[in-house]
Image (cartoon, rainbow, N blue to C red):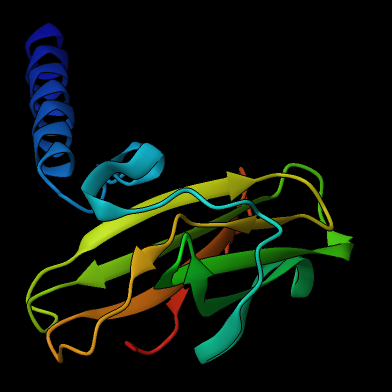
Length: 170
């Protein structure tokens, strides 16, 4: 009996360590706000109140609990002039009327400079407040066909969560 417990214990430990190594190797899972905040990688910090022209569509993320909406947020991509340059950025707005306790809204922007073969993930940036508006840092737009942007969002907490949803590439 003791040897069976030992075998299962060693196997479970190996499984947990192996899963940690696999999870730790994903570039997307390790993306952080620090990858683009403060002028890193060509991004420019902007105030959460900045509005521009909506492009590439918009959407909503809804976390359901017990078959009912529990937390709702909208997301969209904006473009406009920042510091004299044309730039794009992401916006997330959380619902003031439908925002469950402990909900966290997340927004990030993906930027590619090689025709969507690879991209930099700027964020996620988070808020837990109802009726909040947050933005990603802005990135210069370009006439080059190889540069594109998309904005993605998610709502989550300890239990209910939405799927990740994104605008089309623009």
